[in-house]
Length: 266
Image 1 (cartoon, rainbow, N blue to C red):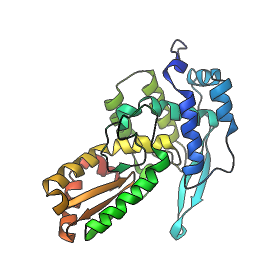
Image 2: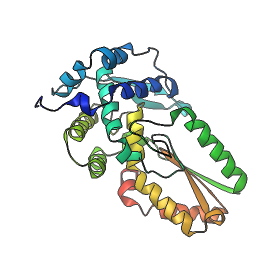
Image 3: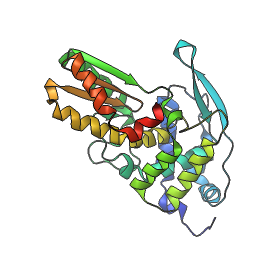
Image 4: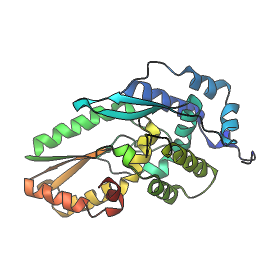
């Protein structure tokens, strides 16, 4: 790979480190370490980022199966700190085009609803806002339908994700490198799709399902707003509140019209 591209001018390593550090406290599995390497890289050895990006090297990941309810596990990984920082910085660089205009009732992996800025996510209060919105809808509507995509991140097809991401970001060295990393991780044995436990993956996933959210928004308005049904999205699932069970069944039919996103999930 050519060394002519100025990676450090194109990426905000300080912001990427802040976002990576937030994963330590907001994730469903908290790392037992603080990853001081990422702060050191971002503040003192940014040349390591350039060197890695100008090479064809991607460090091996460590597989981590995290226990969850009903005796199941989440297929997570532990990334090399340098690759994790780069992954976040690459996604942050295109975040406005990817998730700057998602529906206001979509939560997690999005930018601020007002004045979205590159790499600045409303993580501190997003979970609380989601729960408050959910409480409001439960009080207002008599029927609720909850839909969850099983193995969501690992089910996202990388080919389609890359096609979608390029449609938003165009071409260039940043998206080329991001695609290369995503395809390399997709080849890891016992893993597939997007790697879990990373804000960068949540941003890509939210952007990927944006067309489905748009369908929900369009049809929810067509069936009468407060008299019909109202969606609420949290990255890998939808909670739809409505005036009746029959109305909510109709929402499932409308959702299935977005075939380009649901084919992969069966």
